[in-house]
Image (cartoon, rainbow, N blue to C red):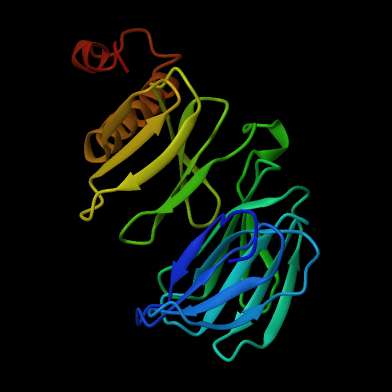
Length: 238
């Protein structure tokens, strides 16, 4: 590359082609032998993130100018996606290749269809829940999204419809990187605090279920004179 640096790189699903971003130019398309095959993109600003769809039919890239561009497998530009208010830092597809997920320095995660239409955004974003996002990963089953919520030092688990499922608190510094285990039962997070935390997601799901159940019990028994002692004991710490 003739650019100052490469921000991101991705292989095609068949492992025969790779695409790299360029800090001062278009996307470069390479063979696995290192031959430059061509380029994509006519934006003046740099591309920060790029990925293929799992079925290999689409390529999407996020730009410093707050937009995303979607191409088909032949390199034809299909859509420019507009909606973010700051640079795109990460992008990925759903497992069925039908949804594009974008992450921006504006602290938002957005969901788009292949027609370039905005379908959803993470709920609660109007409350300013994030100050910068460094990374986002999708669980192996394609049901849970985990962005590293940057400066608030948390990891937030979201459903694919933008519903906040759980907030994981434990780091003392910004969260930088995330990775699901292949079976989806463990999430690893790394941070500026020089630690890596392994989160047992099955145990966390049980704890969350207990918390919801005890909240329901408290509301139900709020006006009861003598709540049953067993339930009281179970919910004392939940």
